[in-house]
Length: 494
Image (tube, rainbow, N blue to C red; front, top):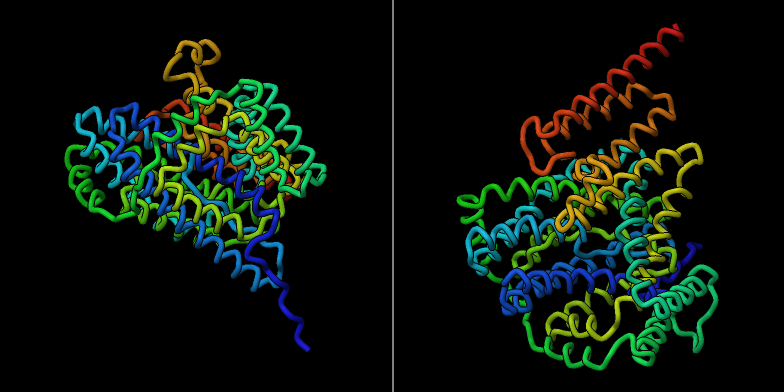
């Protein structure tokens, strides 16, 4: 008699915690996009009427697809504990498109409409490139060591997620520390919250109420929040097509920004899919990269200007015990919230310090996974792969407004922070190869790193031949050393 397939529910209580974690990540990006573009001089009609609805379409499509993909995996493996992949706008990529595509396009054209069309076209091309990259995604996943990929992800988690969100938590120390304590008790100690509420929801209710009671937040936030209400339909447009003509004529230089950041985005997806495989849910990396590319292109068809990716927060959702419901809920809520202007309203009402501790937990879960899913002898490789993101964090946070501060700390910070994901993976891969005494493989990774540096994918502000000469030579010197040790070992065996 055949064993009946385990029930895989559409929604479970744990999905609520994961939803709030993912919701906070996406809502922060949406609000940053809105405030930054408005500050650059883009009108609200473009920001709220085109860009955010387009981004919402991409977020909806991706989350619904990954919920279906989780159901397919659950049926295939006869399991009920499968967690759907998180999906949204990549934060580092978002900043690159804001300041590397939208801002220069706005400055050069002095026309918000044209600048938006150029950015939408760049977003569409980025999605198409990622679809092409997906053809080699599985090969890269098989040949890059897990310690290198997860170490790179852990570097992002430590700096931009756990670290940055802990800073945000402590901007209101009474609120932030209390909410952090609730998260730790509920999600690490697995203690049930009063009224059997999900931990994240309970933390947000208590934190928000206390913030207004003690005066850390005032009632003026409400009046500001309601200013964003309205109706913004999700409608396709031809901005991407109009922007292509502009992009391939007067704005061709912007493509030099799009290519490396798309490679980064594809690798970010690969790393995060690998992290989920380590946590127990094995998805096809090629399919995920293709879905991310298609989602990005779909968002561009509706006016979106920011590429999407599988989120680093997925492992945090796995730790929370989430299934597919949080992904479905996230997609649905973002579609409705964007259409009626609710995203910015909620962001204005709920203090950041209330929701930031949830992402602290997501970050520390990623760091823990990077170590727990690798053999102890690979810990140094994981740790080394995390380091480039310290430089990237310093560079992105201080370099624009206080370059002298960064330079006084070390002249290598900016160069190390440029292409940090690539550097992290190559340093981690070299370290794993050395630990395994696979010196030939270490030499190959060093040569590839030299090539990336030579064309400006690492350690350089832009693409170009001989873009980071000293780094190219440095990696080649490493390769020569590894070749020597490989030859020495071979001679000893003979």
